[in-house]
Length: 204
Image (cartoon, rainbow, N blue to C red):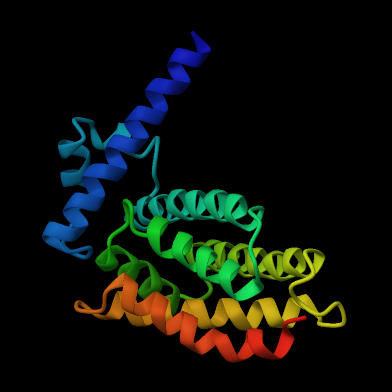
């Protein structure tokens, strides 16, 4: 019974997120009302609040779920063998761009980023920044893995290099969500070109 109850709760939560995300895109984040999300999900407002405290909480749940998928797939990618670090980073970049937009649209990412700017002291911002830190740490782990494979010189400090590489990915991510015309391929190509000098300097 406990398992069934948990599955029903998860299904309801996903239904709320799906309806809210659809309305954020169709109606706009600011114009979407909790009452309308609850009605679309076939719930009372009181029941809605058993799952989420606010629209921002829904948005953060969507972003968090997407980022967890990215982190999981990227860990698998990092564990694969590569002929050199630059090739491995291209594969990692592909994972980031492939899985970051499976359920969270550019518009929703724009809203999420804007929320961190509008209220930098909020729990939303704190949790969003924590996700970014996990991604940055993952790229640092990628550098360590490439060192262990003999692709990066052992005297290189992986943490500042990993942070630098992640910052490049993140800046191109922001450029992508700001634009309505940039393609994922164009942005990955930009990351590749901008990262190439770093790998030429640190390669074994």
